Length: 206
Image 1 (tube, one colour):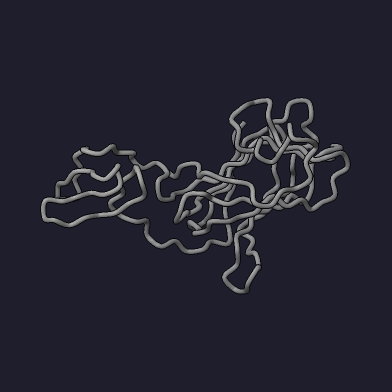
Image 2 (cartoon, rainbow, N blue to C red; image 1 turned 135 degrees about the vertical axis):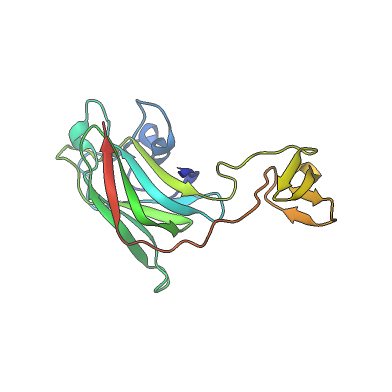
């Protein structure tokens, strides 16, 4: 099972106001959401970047529970990642039709390695705004779901034993070798290379 990956906004769509900024999509609060001005012009593009390195995306979750404004919730949406085929291009991972007042997720057929992605909203459910309560990109990356180990912590890797040194990011083994990882965390193996998947399957829960 993957973990929610840390995201920042890289391409901002029209916003009703700062109170409904795109960053509201990352907040775990029932009354916060992103919302466009009245009469949005589709498609709307929301660009994101995963801030943890070596990100591998497994699924994407959408929350359309926007109380009082359900018909403004995003309906037909697509997720794209940078294409390997040409500079500046985008490859569509999937397109899905979202229901109103639900949490719905799309599971990729295979994990996709990408640091950037964008959400393209093609329509809503007929309301006068475009809105979305939450977006979660779920997968694996360096530091996501990994142990934060302070200096002096004993660690093991197979038959080897060592200790965390240098502010928590160098592991010094008894055989004199050192293993480096990002500051404050230790990982013993990198994720296997991911292959790009062009299709996904969606699941929903109320």
